[in-house]
Length: 389
Image: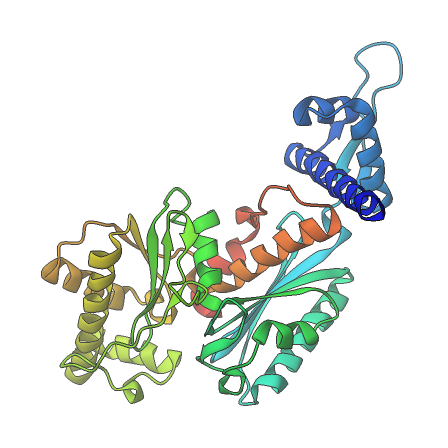
């Protein structure tokens, strides 16, 4: 009997939270609503809506909005609006060479973003420093941080154990989500950097209306994320959607020493465009190899779309050579596009994950997936992108 009562209590709590989420989502979408309007949109009874709005109001997630002008006799109905800054979330990318941070409110409106070079410190020291960066930035904004999404480079199995650590070799064989969570005072979600980028493309980028697509990352050798039927494909080992296959050396293989960092690649591309034969040859070797690997993905996956991502995708001259090789070697059926988010696709995906988690933490399950406000992201992904990455 006790178990049954406890089970019923948990079910009632979940139903209550789910109904709160439905009400909050309706108001968030509309901007402001009355109790009657929320009831009409959600299909919930007026008493249920009244109780759930009171819960949200008490939690600081709703405020009374300015009343509309009365249409007749009597006092106008109270309107409620969603409190976007009742909490803030952070998206953090710990890449091999740089770290990016994005802070948004609960409506997905960007409040702050920044980028800094990665230190030469070890994994734990870098993580602790990044966590302090997040905390200090939230304090400067004067807002309450409620959740963090952290994107890291490295393949993880279903339990979060690093199979391949692209940047943090000390974490290989360890359960990274637990390590990351321990560095923060609020809930933290850990995801593969490529999975984060794929989430961004799927939810607000080129792949919004696409069920099957691949995201090749142009850097040294191509790795790729795969989404099939709208779901990230992780293979037998569930590696968070990252197919980080390093294809065997061949005549087109590129020595990593030729491509040690983003500035060196930028200089190499500029030199190739200026007529430097050695630079042009290096560029041709890389782009031929990249095209070969992307063509293999095209043949095996047969995607609807190929979205080029990564540090090298910002160089038009390099992308044009990749596409030219593809057109020459294999008539590509799927369109090839470059991610419109530059190198911010990963940190945006981390912020989206944190927004989803924050909605469930603060309100309940059932709110529609959060999307970052595109109009507020222009600073990060618009004309100044090249200067930031």
